[in-house]
Length: 161
Image 1 (cartoon, helix red, strand yellow):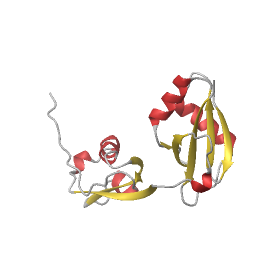
Image 2: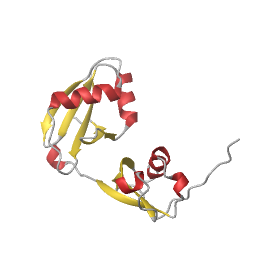
Image 3: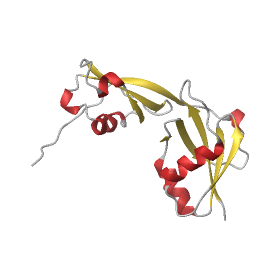
Image 4: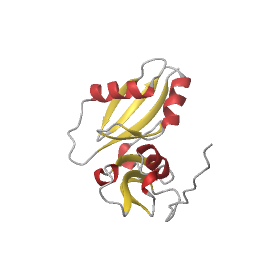
């Protein structure tokens, strides 16, 4: 029994597209499935992924949106009569500003964790990572506009012993 997902790879602005083989090799390293999957290009950045086990499909599906550094892969359920021309895109890459965040929280892991409250963190701005500009931290995030949007995020710190 074959298990399938579809996905759309959205390239970063100015990046040169990679071959299907290159993309599949990158995905295999990230997904770490028990068996290899097959990847079929459907055109215009859409792909179909076939898995030989349901477990592998669920492992990949749980990872959600994947940043491949060459673009963002968004996965969605395969449907029998999938038509890429009728597919509705509700995602966009947005630069967010984390205002009034003390510099001690400007570590990559912390910034990514905070940004994950609004979407999938993709890239931390150079000025932020090098602590050049301290008014706010900036991060590129893949956001789903079909979900609730937040104007504010409360960041609480815990006590460490």
